[in-house]
Amino acid sequence: MKKKIIICLIPIACFIYFLPEINQQARGGSLRVIPKPSMTLHLSPNSSSCDCEDESVLYQNVPTDQLDDIIKRRKKEYKGYQLRMKTNVSILLAPANSPLQYPISGFIVTPQQKSVIPGLALHTQKRKLYKVTLRVDSGVLAVKDAPDEKEVNGQDESELTITSTNLTQLNNLLSRVTYTSTIYHIRTSDLVHFSFEDNKATFPVLIRRPSVPVLYNSVNDINSLVTITTKTFLRYKQLHVLLKSIRRVYPKIKIIIADDSLKPESVSGDNIEQYIMPPAQGWFAGRNLAVSQVTTKYFLWVDDDFEFLNETRIESFVEIMEAVPELDVLGGVVSGEQFYYTLEYVEGDEGGCLKRIQGGYHSPLPGHDGCFFVDVVVNYFLARTDAVRRVGFDPFLNRVAHTEFFIDGLGQLLVVSCKDLSIGHQTHEEQKEYDPYRNQRKDEEQRKLAHHFFKNYLKCIKY
Image 1 (cartoon, rainbow, N blue to C red):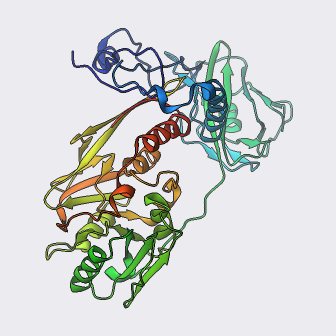
Image 2: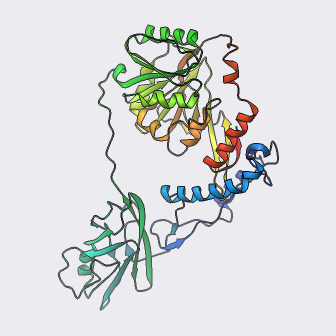
């Protein structure tokens, strides 16, 4: 059995985590298969944990005298996160058989607005009297235009009873049952409990405030679709090589430069914007600044020591992104190397376990040879501006940071890497003044890992 190795972030008992064994159980072992379509039994998810291996344990990440307090505050913050994001979702199991018909999923309502529940019906043998009951937890129910109060009891209340001697009439009334949430929330849910005799079912109501679309009014022109962004620090010689190579291929495209050099030098040119930052603010602070100024649908991120080649064609990026609108980030190739990773993440009640796997991918992108769904790509990528802004770049990370953006975006960003989208990397010697800022000191690494311990609710991480 192949072992999954994950490094601990805090002093904790560590073990081997056997993912293949768990997957095997899920495929055909002792785990119970949940039947399909309708939902009745309401269960709470089991507590979960992930284990870490006893190697490279970083005891110094969190100061010992602060650890208890940090764990307490982290747990409180995590519970708030679960409430906001609705990550702690209950499980609804389907009954083996039921005469009740109702929506399994996809019933979405606007907060405090009346909506007809689609698909409600009863299918059963002939009876003298038919009686069904519906009950909700955070709303009220009603029958729209109910003709006879004797048949409907509980209008505009949390429990509604419908009776009839005629099944067709009963189903006619059920087809007009409405739900209205009584609490205001932009992203929450309720449960409808539906019963007939000994038959009971439960189905969810998703309460969502509709979002206003954010669209970019761009014509079919690369200059109106894409902005090139970069962050520079003490490397003006390399930056000017990059700019010259861009202008050779794209003479009019907009370029945004975030600059936190110690002694800034003016960088001028047509359609070039240079934003001067306080000195040495760092990598992610610069990324945030640059992306905040983008007004186009997409931005292309490049390092300041990259160089556009004859085969560097932004149009190839855009063509794929336009063909697959669900994509958020599309990475390319730097100097012939296609760097990409997947992230293996296991949630845990006391903190999750995270591992970065180089060269791993989830599946090929259909219709595009050499493109793969991944979680992390190289520093050369095209991204949807609005999608990246929703995740953002953590300015706490000012020295060594890249994967961390994709960690924050895990489950939010759909990421692909493609082999035919290439750019060059300049060959140069690093400056002595630059090296101390580029290389991460031991104390900076400790602060960074302690930061992930709290912020990302992680117990273990393996780069």
